[in-house]
Length: 59
Image 1 (spheres, rainbow, N blue to C red):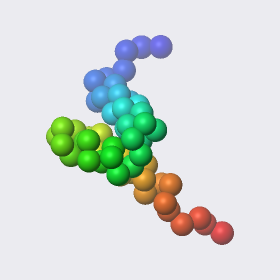
Image 2: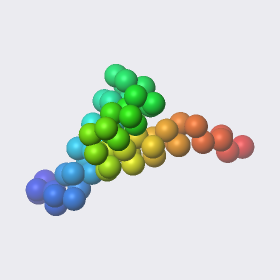
Image 3: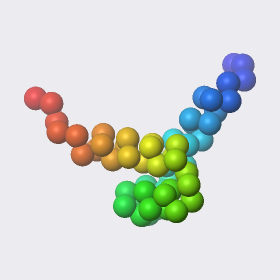
Image 4: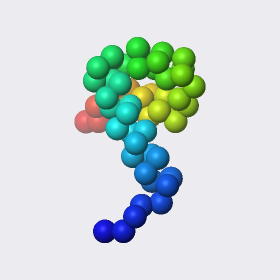
C-alpha cells in the first residue's frame, strides 16, 4: 500500500476527530467546540454525521 495524498490523509484525520468529539461530547458540544476552535472541516464532518443519523428511514 502506497502513501495516501495529503487531502485523503486530512479527510481521514478530520473524520476520526469528528467521531471522537461526537462520542465524548455529543453532537451539540462537538459542533460548539469546532466553531470555537475554527475547525471548519471537522465541523462539516460533525454536521454530516448528524444529518446521517437524523435522516428519515427509507421504506
